[in-house]
Length: 138
Image (cartoon, rainbow, N blue to C red; front, side, top):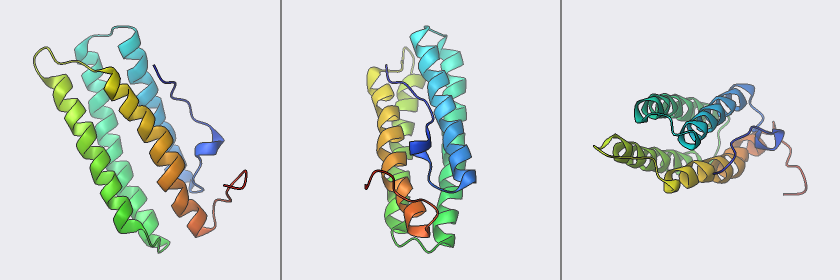
């Protein structure tokens, strides 16, 4: 299973967004632990619902930040957020079905969200705004 841990390399340069990313990662880690420890489906669904609600609020707040700094790829980023929420919802619906379960594909999806979205597109608005200086020449 993936490891969901916050590190400074995930910072985007906006404290509120970094705090929300940390909260998302904590929920991902909690869910991962629940799955590994064979927690009840009900427990996992509570965490999933919390994660989904936070993701919706976070994406809306993040889009406001991007709009506020005039980020030119905001429309593209909105599409990325919409796609993430659709994929999350698909996994959630699968888990809520009778005999549904959280699959390794769901953990891989969360890991991709963490490493692919936060480290990729999210850092772009931090760099664009001048609040984030790319480290390591990337």
